[in-house]
Length: 203
Image (cartoon, rainbow, N blue to C red; front, side, top):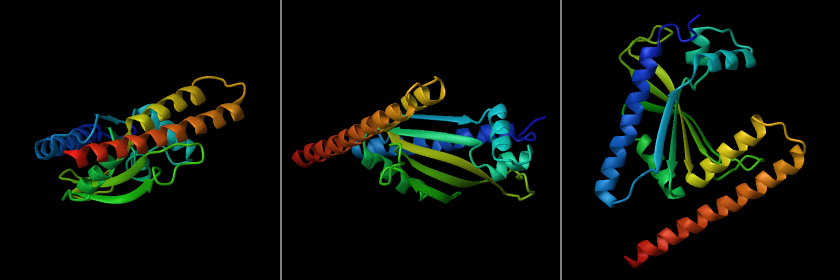
């Protein structure tokens, strides 16, 4: 069974479209300020087996409608920025895109998760010329965007590696230590942001 019901080419095209939007914004920002909006940019269409597993975990029917409408992360993009301010600059730019509506936002930078996780999450509704899974033309497709600093991304990757790919003997102790490291990295992000402001004031 094709969990995406033949919509994979549309999802691939949507991913490329959104990545190009970010790249163009970065080029304009570089011309205007001399600085990059982000350090790196990655995207993916969720693997079919991962989407099937998610549908099953959420007790949803394993159907294209569940994959494309009930779940909102068939297309995912991660924007990794050098500084916290750059994240909010990206968010302001996304708000100006004509064919994109922000349907959900979660600011885990201002309000970190209890385990120390920090990131800014957005769900975008993107209008496309192709008919969507419920018959709308133009169609509407979801894209999940995560925006982080390098420090946040490093922590999230290591936390995932340690918690989900290894059997941990002392999960409570490791959890507390991960939280401590997350807080230290967050402090470093703030310090780096402050230094950036001081340097710019001297220019």
